[in-house]
Length: 148
Image (cartoon, rainbow, N blue to C red; front, top):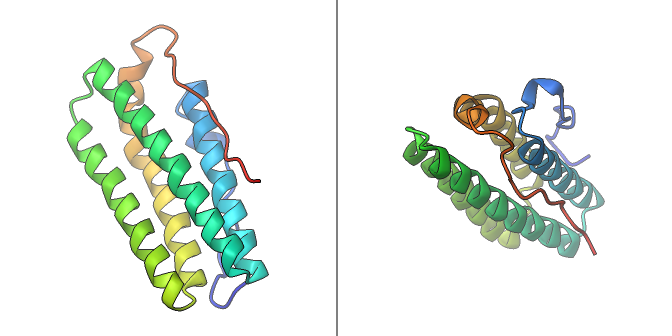
């Protein structure tokens, strides 16, 4: 892999399951997006890396909107804090993409994304799970990280 990226790849586990199948599928798709980004970074091709960053940005935007819709639907009381966390991730990804265009920050990018994603799903996302469990058959749109 690239210089400085030493942590093992981020792998989905049952510990990260929210119990809401569509959201779990979306989280797994984000893992796939990150895996594709990590592969592009390892291949050291700027175009592939930028494309993978854009796919991650696009998919997380859709996923965050869906999570926020569901939290609003169930009246999740800490929705504002969760939305701020989503905005922070989008801002960081934007800044990293902009910086990447100037010089290679591949290792820092991968480590930041891995850390943020794992902490967010295992911590912040799990806080709204009890609220969603109260609603029968939550309908969340599942998707996938698509690469052409």
